[in-house]
Image (cartoon, rainbow over all chains, first blue to last red; front, side, top):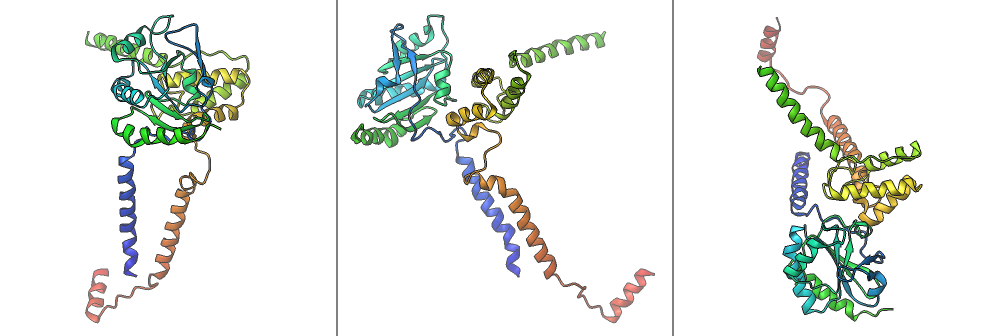
Amino acid sequence: MKKVYLIPLIFFILLAILLKIGLHLNPRDIPSPFIGKPAPAFDLPRLYQKDQRITSADMKGKVWVLNVFASWCVSCRAEHVVLSRFIRTHKVPTIGLNYKDYGTEEYGEDVLSWLSQLGNPYTFVAVDKEGRTGIDWGVYGVPESFVVDKKGIIRYKFTGPVTQQSVEDILVPLILKLREESAS
Amino acid sequence: MKLVVNTLLFSFLMSFFVAVQAGSIETHSFDDPKKEATYKQLIQELRCLVCQNQNIAGSNAELAQDLRRQTYEMVTKGATRDEVVDFMVTRYGDFVLYKPPFKIKTALLWIGPSLLLLLSLIFLVIHIRKRPKTAEIALDAKQRESVQDLMK
């Protein structure tokens, strides 16, 4: 009978544990519905070769990364160094999706100086001026990075800047593993 | 004089407020009042993922503007409410909805409160039933007398 009085205490402890866990979760980390799904198709103009286009079909059969960035995005700057090193060391084909950047009609004043200042690690830079491809990829917080396998399936997504630790713990092992997989 | 200054100051500050408010509303024209109603309903229901506790109707974030534009374009092209919701959910997940769908994952969210109420009711009933029906405090003669005294 006495034990009944313990119930509120147990309840309280359980609630406290839940709240404690909740405190350490990142509310920005919304589970992506894209993991395990085919990467959305896109067809966008390239930054340096404006008359050329880059499409999702161009990346078929490769393990590649799509990195959403913009010159107005502060944490992209921090991420850029880490990501560039990763791309160069492991020779990862990467599309930089320049998301809603400022500039003139001839898109990209700001992004051009940003890239010449910080270095351009991208295999291709695609310009998404109106953010429509961004919507297709469910982008809501730049920077975001997607890892796509040889079959064109999205296997991982980072929301927010990629850190050196996540490169070592997640990206490198994942890329090596995906390269082992067959394309068909 | 003071009143005049205050009034001027007040209208000056209010004009800022109005300007900021007006910034977040684009004017969209609809050929069909039904489509307009669908659009208005949708922007109330969809969450802005940047400022997570606002719907896209109330948010001035760039993403909210883009999602409003997307919603507007789809609705004017004749998309139904469900089609727009599907479009958003495949891209942003259930989180984009203010009213989450009923799934195993969200079952606790939906049933939780009723379950809690039910459990507390059961607990309460058991507790009341177990309680002795009559007062068991026996009074001796002296206490009885003082009670009588008090009640006079």
